[in-house]
Length: 98
Image 1 (cartoon, rainbow, N blue to C red):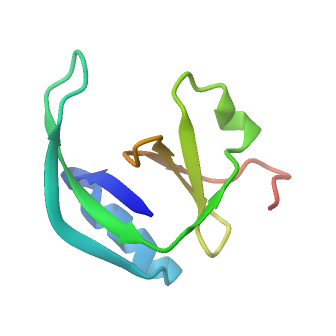
Image 2: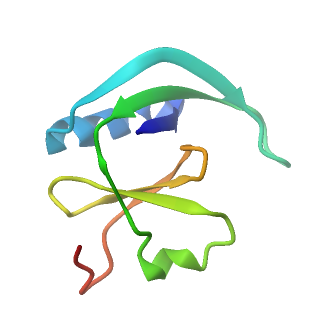
């Protein structure tokens, strides 16, 4: 998967992927993103081997289209927008199993 992480969160996300034993590579590709009403910020591309899963119903009410990737421990899910931009890392809802 291609994951675009704000440069300010790169260390945190890389640390989680490393701790989980995920095969990943931080590429040298960086981009500037501008979100309406906010300042532009820089993102860095990470290539990672993660299992894409169905977005848990708890997060489906989000007005944006989301994609979900389960970490090997099954204790965290990475949510991205449809383009691979990091939205957030969350714990799976209680009783959710895949």
